[in-house]
Length: 287
Image (cartoon, rainbow, N blue to C red; front, side, top):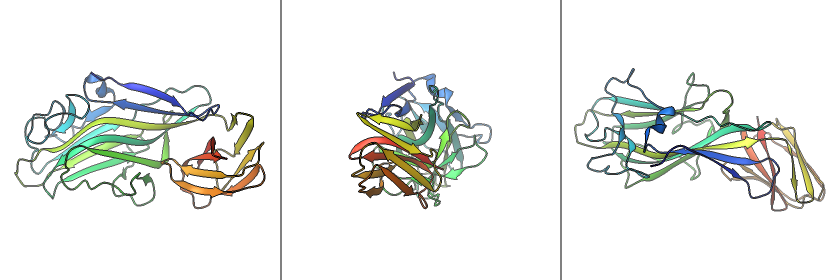
């Protein structure tokens, strides 16, 4: 059975400080209880349960035998609201390292009547305020495929849900919390509802603002940045590329010198990766 795993991956670029860790857990055993809270206080008939599904459409989990599901045996309750919360794990970090939560991924299936709602909200301040992950239009969330998935209709088999966001959450202060809400309609049609498994939280970690690539020293400052940032290299910056947290290229250019000043006006807040002459050179946070 799978327990909580904290895996740290060091970028293959050879930087002096960069890490991209993530945290993955399944519902196969009781370890999920450290991060998951099924709301039975405000939702008295809460359908969310963790266990092996024995339903018409939902017959097994994605990773193991147990999943989070709207009732493991019976169809979902009509005219009802069911909620559970997931608090992103906090990462322990070495000195000068600042881990930032920047995304979530999981697998799911939906078996719904058309008037049902499968909703996901996110709070960066321990639940005081919430943003709708699926409908927020302020540029806070970033979808790898360009748009949010359709959570109002049934799916065919397991689907991958993956979203990043630019309003990073420092895991040394407030916790990032996801709220999963299932609202059923008045139809009594025997549908299975919603099943979720294999949650993965993605983090970026920042350290010092100077890194060494072979014989090339690169400095990126100020970091975090405001409206401008300076990128200085001991080698000529023949090609400079800047990508956002989900890999979209936001800037490319050729420069004959080793000193480049970029205007960040209009760049959304978040983490950006810098490549010089085709090699990862560092990163910065835009406030």
